Length: 80
Image (cartoon, rainbow, N blue to C red; front, side, top):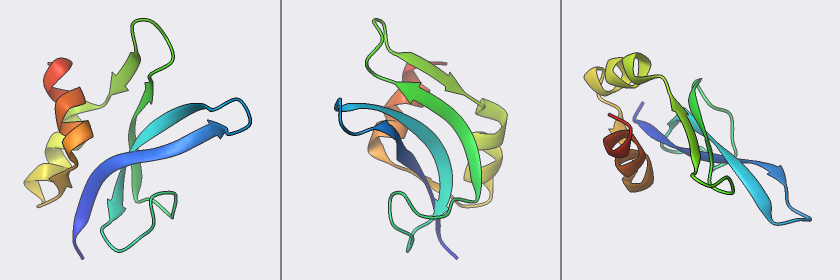
């Protein structure tokens, strides 16, 4: 099973204000499908954007062969 670490939308769509979870998810699942583990949160509406990342768990998933999406890769890079 190929695993990706990517964003999952959560929040209210009526106001177009979304929050995101950073999740480990099977590559074949949909964006908002069942995830394996929640690894952090991202709220782009706050100024500055609020990001909380569990770096140890992300490192563990990457060590097991998971791939980071481009957006998550940039969020992790900014929060080192």
